[in-house]
Amino acid sequence: MHGSGVQIYECARSPKETARFAWLFKAPAAELSDPRGKAVGRHYAGPTWEANDGSQVVGEVVASDAAPTADAIPWLLLRAKSTAGAGAFGGTTFIQRLHTLGGRAPAVGCDEAHLGQAASIPYEADYYFYAPRR
Image (cartoon, rainbow, N blue to C red; front, side, top):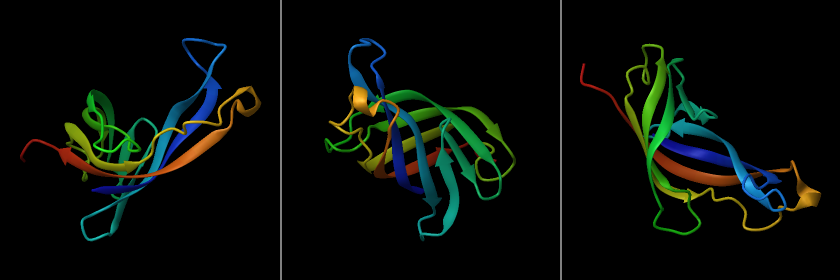
């Protein structure tokens, strides 16, 4: 499935150095479409993928690799932490995020005057969902 939406970041104090500020990732917000462009679901915090049939999968990252372009978010391999429903995502065991475009945190603009402000950065990615044969 193709995902198109935003990666949401919040300006906050750096977890390691409270005198510094950083854009921290909060959540994705994307629409999912099939290869023909038909809307089939959405992707949001968790990270969660939810199909229009109500089925869901929540993933956890098991591997990450830098995208081929510097402005793109990493390519990921995620394991299904939980699933719900018997539909499209009900039996998912792994998810891959590949072919990412955009979505990286802003390089500037996070300081004490901007604490708590959000930045929504456009991105696209292809998501591959794996499940045992039925």
